[in-house]
Amino acid sequence: MHSRRPTSTSACATCCAPTSPATACSGPNIELYRHLCARFPRLAVQASGGVREAADLAAAREAGCAGIVLGKSLLEGRLKLPELMEGRATC
Image (cartoon, rainbow, N blue to C red; front, top):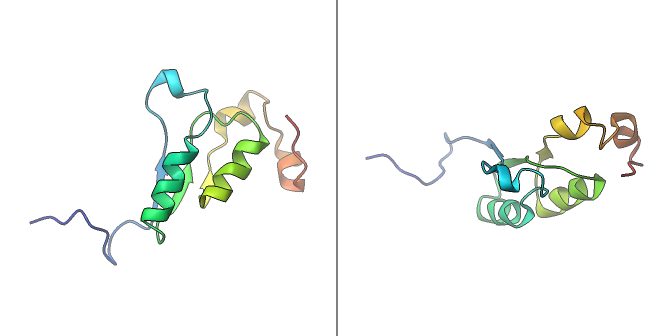
């Protein structure tokens, strides 16, 4: 029988992103990430999906996420990597 509970050999990281186009640009689902991080504190959750501004990064960090995917935000110029690296992103 397969166990659905995390074990010492279970995954230690996961990337979680919205799958609905309707939610793709509405920002990260911070409540979902907060729930996952609280429920599985040893799991390194990587947030993803619709990062709009630097405040989304701060919210994901505050929710307990280990990281966040910035691909489209950087590609479309909503966030600038040098500003993120210096901690002074403006949106």
